[in-house]
Image (cartoon, helix red, strand yellow):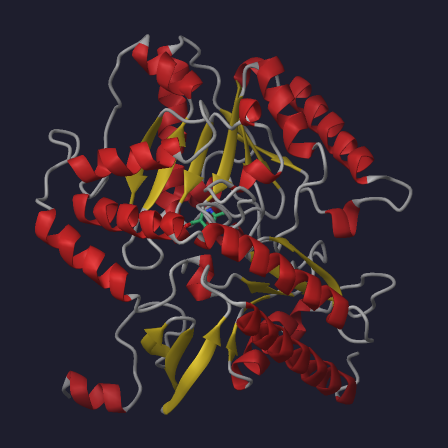
Length: 473
Ligand SMILES: Cc1ncc(COP(=O)(O)O)c(C=O)c1O
């Protein structure tokens, strides 16, 4: 049988997502709209409110991005980065450093995915402590309901149901990985606490864990500034990140932020790049930070590790060389495209635009969805990254049974209404409810915001009615 015949029978030759049938395929994208081929039908003008997985910044099929790609392809010659570097990777690193608060970062390494950037951050941290003669600093403290990627090192730092089946291949999760509580104001801040009290409680708990696990053996505290798929854009309570920074200073531990999903302009209040600028002063910048997604805006696979002066200086005062590398690290074509994309975003103030329009979208969603009786328990987020959490009971915050698949069902209802969102299931232990994530392109206008909100409100009303008729809500 030929491949062409098999394709007619809707079989997939790609080993990804659904194995038994051909899943939905994107066939076109223009601006904020995508065309999807699904079950033999063409769906045109689907409003893309999630841009893949919070990847798209410029909008799809951007003419200038295509020119940038053409120019970058013509200007690039491959070289093995450990032996011969290239000018595009240098220029992109300089751009990121110069568009971050002064003194925050002093070097960058470019990788091909967010997972790979977290793997590299682990290696860099290990070498950092070896350079300083501190070989026992190996433990990694990371949070419940976190996601740092799908490679083995990144999974070892992640605590969520997607990781559990792979435990046998992970680091020694009892000795090396220390689970700390997530910061989840909606569910875990006590009624009588202020946000600051809650943050203080988390910080006190963290300090107790640092002390009881021997600070001399702890390498890093790893946190997603604004958690994405695993918890749904729950902003850190006031004082929380600053509290971690202070503990890291006190106990000589690396403060490590994962901004793969929330960073690179998606949630920056100053028209720049980093999400943490919402919560931290420049002097409290992380020591190491990973980024990805919007860096290449879906036009090229690129992610990165940003390295603070403390870490770079240890290398400068030590071996002066980074051990190892990947064949496609700092790829000239990808770096050239990412730089061109970021320059365009800066020139057109698109980061400020998505911050303003995203916050408007969040406010409108809160005002409309929470004003009515429906399955929505919480609406939360910052700038261009928002989530809606679904609950069976708004008063008690009781989540839906995950077997009902409310998050994925909501995604399907939205799709029928011409809106693409990410629908995530809740945690099996009830520690987090089903949710839908929104991360639109940076080019959205007020009109698009209203369209997204209108489609969300309609979809919530429809799913609420469906669940009512099934006796579930
Ligand atoms: C916070 C965070 N870190 C790391 C990753 C992994 O990135 P990638 O899928 O590019 O490997 C993701 C992906 O969603 C993420 O959300």
